Image (cartoon, rainbow, N blue to C red; front, side):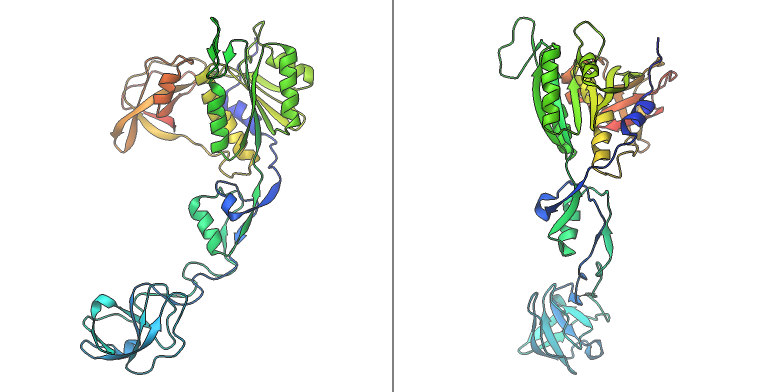
Length: 402
């Protein structure tokens, strides 16, 4: 019997040779969570002029002395600066973000003056250059501030706008076709026959795809026939899917037809069994340019396998520089665990607190791969390597936060 492929080797195969999808230009308002196709340089300097950081009065520091009056000669507001120049013993009323008037080098905040008609009288000492933001404090024209492969967050969108960019070059969204398979499945809201269940996996996988910036293409449910599967595969190709995800039918039973149907269509098979629990029967291959991930039918298995394999694949297609980053963090066991066998375990667990600065995790007693109720309560996946020895409470471990 062929040895099971390790999770690490399987993931390496899934990501091997992935080419980043083509770029497109989108308006800034549509760029959230997209991945930059090229670095972005500032088209302007920010701030473009020396500006006040506070409401108060622009003054010459040489004129500052407590109880020494300064004559008020004008006002500088954001968008409407003072056009003149300060002379000896003069000041200008100024507001936050307004340009610093020529001749001024310090801002006295309004709480530190007493107004006396057309003059102000400083009541506190103020250091020279106080409360002034120099031109270019944030960035200068030509500065490279956003990198290719960076996923755009709300703050990076704001930065791009401040840099003067109305549009950005981003990688197009990966198109992921999702096909549930099985005679036993019906859609939510449909009447279940005596031997049927409600399909649920495809909702989780679609949500994951969209959360990663992809486009989920729902192919519905295919019956356990080569004809139904063939029609679904054709639909995926017609919709120009970059990835086809099948749910169920990935094993080798008489009614598990996904792999054989894909083979008939010309799939190049990478692997179909891995040393992982849950998720041993997992197909990876390709049909032309379309990559294939055949996930197990059990709900928990499909969600966890999508987390481990589909997520980095989508990131890699998107050009996301974090695609191959280790997403695990260190934690501490909240209970004893027995030794593990040849398969890498991904145990659903809760976080019960912290100890010595690390989250404390406790796996659920039942790890049955059909139990969505526990999956929805899980806060982390506790990873147990193949043949891991027995572990004690407060031993360290690795987890993936959910």
